[in-house]
Length: 318
Image (cartoon, rainbow, N blue to C red):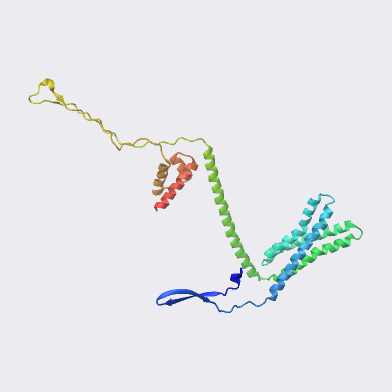
């Protein structure tokens, strides 16, 4: 928020009718701002979890250093310290899972038990590291292990403050709603994967078809109207009354003219194949991709494209 908006007084919009014309204008809002009272419980809860987070970070760092230095005797230092943080990070991750399942006591029990098991393994490893360090090293190991136990204990107390014990019927009701929502989400994700797989399949078929050599177009016979019979009329001698027989003129023979609307052979275009499928769809035929390929005499991928174009035209006309 900049300085201009921080000290600007709030306004409210008023709508009035002035001489039959509705107008809107802003006036300063003098409504007193009611602030929520200080919530001590919320503040203390935030402080509690802040302390728990800091203690967890410290426990993870100490456990990583202690276990990593012990593992470094048998492995490279980078690998030893990388693996050393697995134990403390594991029970910290179980805390997150327990938080997410705090309203479901049955499901929250599993990450809680797993976190306790990982904590015991981490504490045992820290104590072993201290025992290997010297005569009094086991005391240092026990103190270091108690750091992880203290962090885990503070988390358990914090979880106890926010955990709400639901009645069995309400817990079952909440679990049923979550199950229904999860089922809808799973079905939606499954449908998305199916559509994406179908698109990849069509794309792969088109790519494979594009790599094949070009196939000459299928030429279908086109019905042509019957040509008119070439009727020739014999020349008839025309003689005038006073014209000699040697000068008889004959009438000229008629010239045959070809019909202008005569059809010619041409290759079948994709539009023609689409029209063939469109006419069948209009007649109520159910055409599959394989059926379209059989009708047109082309590959199934080409027939699939022609069928989709025909269906689009059918929906457009409807």
